[in-house]
Amino acid sequence: MRLILLGAPGSGKGTLGAMIERAYGFPRISTGDLLRRAVREGTPLGRQAEGIMARGGLVPDEVVTAIVRERIAEPDCRAGYILDGYPRTIAQAEALAVIDGGRREIVLSFEVSVESLVERLSGRIVCPACGAIYHLTRKPPAKPDLCDVCGAALQARKDDAAEIVRERIRVYESATAPLKAFYRERSDFRPVDGEGAADEVFVRTAALLDGELRRAEGGPVR
Ligand code: AP5
Ligand code: MG
Image (tube, rainbow, N blue to C red; front, side, top):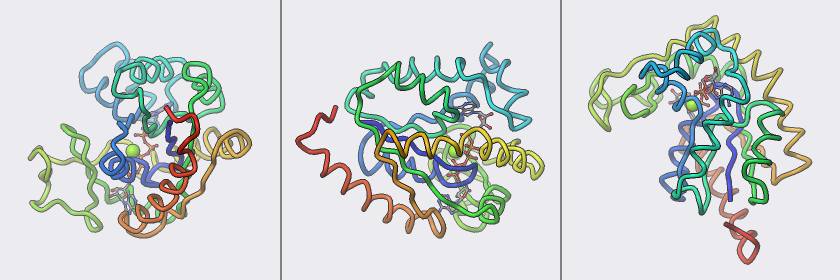
């Protein structure tokens, strides 16, 4: 089994992905988090990705696919995994089918208006140490600017600046949104109303997932 979280920047892939990971036990793999870690650590990959991410563009398909291929080969992914932010182009989706084909695949597409995306990203603060996600008004930390989980100082993501958000949404519409039609034809594609509080979206998501996983029982789930 693999779960693909599809959605525009700020649609809730990271927030909902973490809730699904906790509730269902599949590891969440966020290519954005993996790339940001590489940038922080100054690895060759990080140096290649840094400028592209700062501009709101896409890191080359083969680079991201190599990261995912390595990560899903780890033992904790054997029973299933959650992909957050990958695939993001048709080429990546085709590559995924090659590097790990034959797996049952559920695609959740979080649908959120552009107004909500912009509001969410303008108030987002994140923990650079453990990746926890907050929002200044919708999900503030208990102590201002400190992570509830690990105590590190919270910060805004550099690519959440207004003009970069506009570019990321444009890139999503042109390169990633076409994946909806791609997966509608090939996989269990399920749009999710992503508006409202994260807890409400999670209830909708879990109802969908429970149904899908029940349907899969007895089938070739691995
Ligand atoms: P990535 O980190 O994946 O960014 P993104 O796709 O732009 O998505 P975000 O992380 O901004 O939003 P999200 O959907 O996770 O929302 P969140 O849960 O945080 O990628 C970053 C960059 O890396 C890319 O631009 C690209 O350069 C590169 N990259 C990554 N993967 C790549 C790939 N496969 N190929 C090529 N390049 C790649 O929520 C947002 C905010 O809303 C939070 O503050 C949250 O608290 C709040 N919120 C309010 N209500 C809700 C609700 N109902 N659900 C969830 N959150 C809510
Ligand atoms: Mg995210």
